[in-house]
Image 1 (cartoon, rainbow, N blue to C red):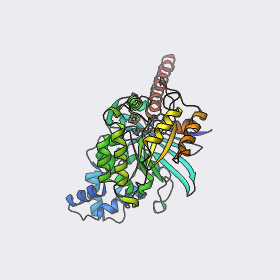
Image 2: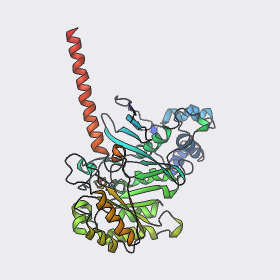
Image 3: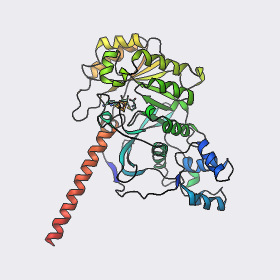
Image 4: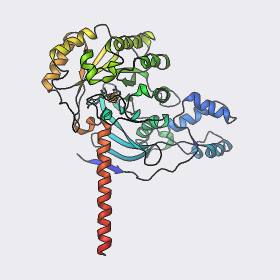
Length: 399
Ligand code: SAH
Ligand code: SF4
């Protein structure tokens, strides 16, 4: 397989005090324009330039008067997070490593996975919400890193902006379209623990002046922060995925420690309430149940039986995820036969149960697995830089 792997930059981004408009929701942008003494509808105009035509230079926003464009240039900017590395595979998978925060900052990764479905070409973007994660699920490499920081709205929506923009770099402004069809908040971090920035960013995903995505194609995945599931239902209509991973409290306490605070008898009703909230017209006809398959741990016939009992009243689709191993992981991946037997038991009981397709390395990096790879790659890049520098010294001293 050939790759287009490009090292983009290693410099520290310049620090500016201009307001970044990229992550502002429509309401926030309207308020911003009102404060500037301008009409509210300017917000929609600027949003379209930024999120639909990928224009960041105010001078190119031709339906805005020259005077206002000058004013905007002075006080604000449109700035996506810095891409330090990108990797485009021949199979269509794309990955970006972003540097977020000031100075050296931290690294987060975003992955785009293409798939052909019955409606045409699907492009699913797996977006991160935090650097690291405080919840420390025992099978997750992000959790092993601990929590470092929340991402800001511009860093979250910036991942979608960069992914879409990457297909339009050589396209005339007037011809540009959005390529990403689906978003899953399944990268690094627990989205419900970075609530407002995540909700603001997701509102941009749904907004017709921005990405205009269907609410069924935007999914938030959570390990089960019960009060925040209820809060999400109040604020946003998106699809919900619950990272269940175990059908009883004893095992779930071990795999997903937040279960000790919000056990299954609270989590399942919260998922039910989320679905019931807006009736059948919403994105919430069912929840997706994610279940990572860990060899000999949660993949036995008795676990499948317990799943049937646990989920019998919850409209759900179950997605079995073959475990992605990482260095020093305390688990192995369940065998194909085990996974298929588990699926059969659930399908025979009437559940829609799918197995997540893995496509080698590319998909391994997609969900919950990003940081280890970023960290490894960074370490390798550092070692490589040192080596080059040392070689430079040798060449200089020889010369
Ligand atoms: N914190 C949120 C979203 C990010 S994790 C959550 O837990 O839902 C995204 C998904 O990847 C979750 O279902 C998570 O359990 C899964 N995941 C994490 N580590 C994994 C691994 N090593 N192999 C397979 N799936 C993993
Ligand atoms: Fe955090 Fe999700 Fe990983 Fe658990 S699975 S540690 S909640 S990112």
